[in-house]
Length: 127
Image (tube, rainbow, N blue to C red; front, top):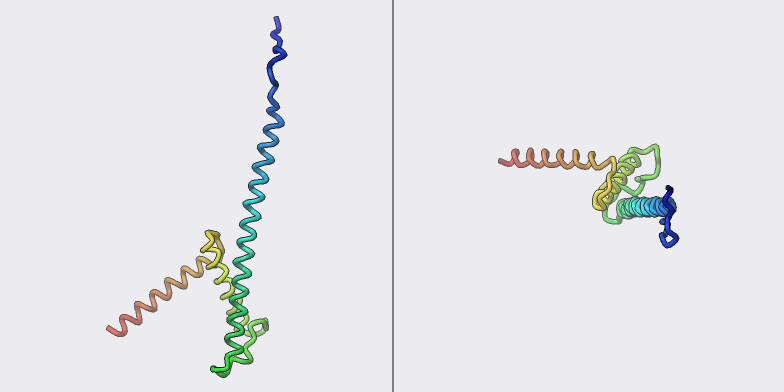
């Protein structure tokens, strides 16, 4: 005796529903990744904006002489290398604020530890 499914039973489209759920989850992950990419881009743009402000303040400073020929964009000058590191540290700071990881955050933590050591040494010198 084979049992027949009554005509009034609705067949659920389980395979179609599984495909729909998978598609929805993929869409959610893409949206999350896009949001993270946008935040990273904003952090980098903000770091570059800070660089522009620093460059203008240093080279366009009418109160302090001797920095007019500094060129943060000349790859042959050491200040370009320094500024490149500073820009990346700024980006790392902005990443951290947004809750994202950046490889320079460890460098920032080490620099902060070093600063704390130097402050303690200075305090010891005055005691």
